[in-house]
Image (tube, rainbow, N blue to C red):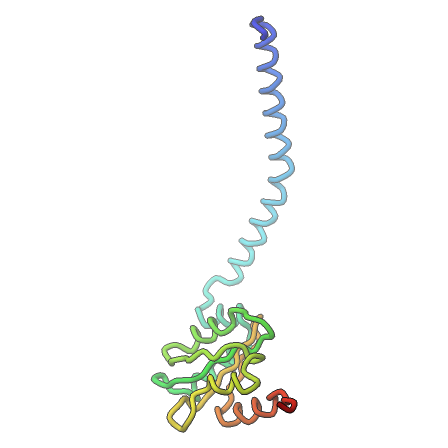
Length: 167
């Protein structure tokens, strides 16, 4: 162990100098990019000042998506019901956003479109004329949802039904 106060004092001042040097290096390398980022965000905020919620929704989701949602809203009444299908090859959150945007209309989730083709998938669909008249197919990444009549959707699914071999 070192008991010499001069050595301990020197070591302490070296460590302080290194720590202050590292802090200075961090500040020199991080402040310019942070300032550029802050300035960019400030310019964006100034450009969007006064934008209403509808304008922000169009900017974020895209014009095609918003037009599709508005068309579906005009077709399905506020107290109506629809079936919603995930149109992506694997699960994603598109149906959540579409369901949110179509609220207060009631949605019945059917699952992935790829899983509905075939006998097991067709059995998930409500039968008879009492079920929802419309099917909404939701896609990822701001792709506009599709609105299809249930009977048309069923016909298209039956065409996709995999062929079964004998036995």
